[in-house]
Amino acid sequence: MKLFQKEHVSALCLKGGPGGSGSGFGNFEEIGPLNRDLEPRKTSWVQAASVLFVDNPVGTGFSYTEQPDRFATNVSTVASDMLVLLKHFFTQLPEFQSIPFYIFSESYGGKMAAAISLELSQAIAQGSVKCKFAGVALGDSWISPLDSVMTWGPYLYTTSLLDDYGLADVSNAAEKVKQAVEQQQFLKATELWSITETVVEQNTNGVNFYNILTQEPDDKLASSAGENFISLQARRHIHPLHKQSLSELMNGPIRKKLAIIPQNVTWGGQAEKVFSNMAGDFMRPVVDIVDQLLMAGVNVTVYNGQLDLIVDTMGQELWVKQLKWEGLHSFTQQRWTPLDDPAAPGVTGAFYKTYKNFGFYWILKAGHMIPSDQGPMALQMLKMITQQD
Image (cartoon, helix red, strand yellow):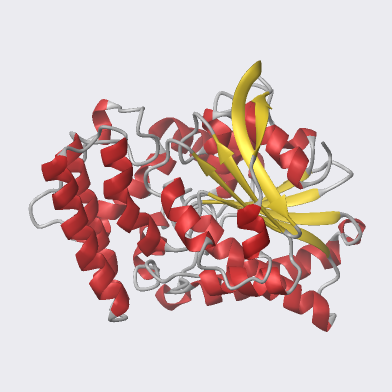
């Protein structure tokens, strides 16, 4: 856990994976006061909020467990674990009890953020936590995995990254994922999701799932003979969050600065175990939890990067349209509003629309990691969501 303090609002930032580190990737690669080279970041979110980074679930980043059965296997456990931390946080730092508190998330962190937000709002209502919970923001979030997978083919086809044959291949693979989900075979669905990603890679010459316009040589990850799908998916989605330069920073200067990390614990050392333990829960949707939050009056914001494939905007819009929230019809009737890119006045950087306690931001020229791709736009969005702009 790492806190950077600013007076007016506070925000908990959750990363994805599961197994992605908030104190590492979220902090030094995206929104913290310093970048990976320990140079000041001009678009740090600490300009607008006190930011709390948590390595979550247990086993992520510097957090660890010495007992194999203590890893979380579902978002319900993740939420109850986080509530223990938040109770302690607001008890030990009572000055934050009266400051608006937001949860911002990315990727699988959004799925966890939804569950955590519901647990937190219920705890506040019961009086077991003192907190001025002001809302949750779900960035490129794995809320409805199937809607993401089912739109990969159409999205890639319309962006000229699949031909007719490739579209058929990807659609057929995605359909098998759908069948497994419908049969409630969620571990099998996760394996078939992995196979679908391989089909995508084969037909797109190794498209980058996190930004379709950015392709590095090491993005092409051919599966090794005999490699199980958990290891393959860890290489695809966990290893990019633990690049060598970041690992050297976290296990070197940062570890030394913290001076509390046990000698046998390595930053990111249990990340793959975090991922594998959550595999059976991976393809389960949490759209119903978002509905519960909206119906309870919690402020919910969805934001997504235009160039993201793994959680493409088409899929996000599909699950939003499935909401049972009574304000959905009025929300869909709204026209979106363009936003100038703060880094290029006169150039559109995003669109957004809101109705009552729900909002949606379409962030242009950004992939899965919006703060990394469009830092100024992400910072402006933060200010708008927290009502500072």
